[in-house]
Image 1 (cartoon, rainbow, N blue to C red):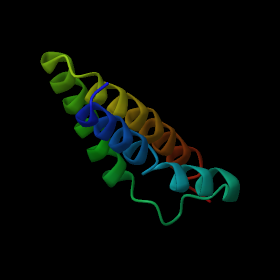
Image 2: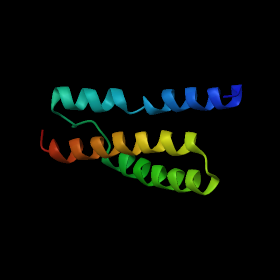
Image 3: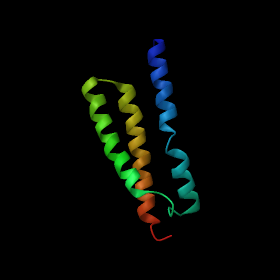
Image 4: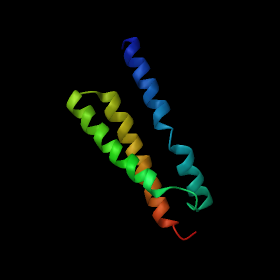
Length: 86
């Protein structure tokens, strides 16, 4: 694996952690009062587009990163809907 690939996978790991603190916080507190549903819906659509782009480019770093991101984004949307009245 060359240095460019290592950088790509390192960026993947950091990016994949972007939504994790919010998901964990919302899950622990069982409250999504101050979470923007619209932001996560936009992010979800964005992740779909990045996955499609990664598939078309045959770029595993982009695909892996955005599959992780869409998973966390989906979890956050689910938590927001579950705790919408809390």
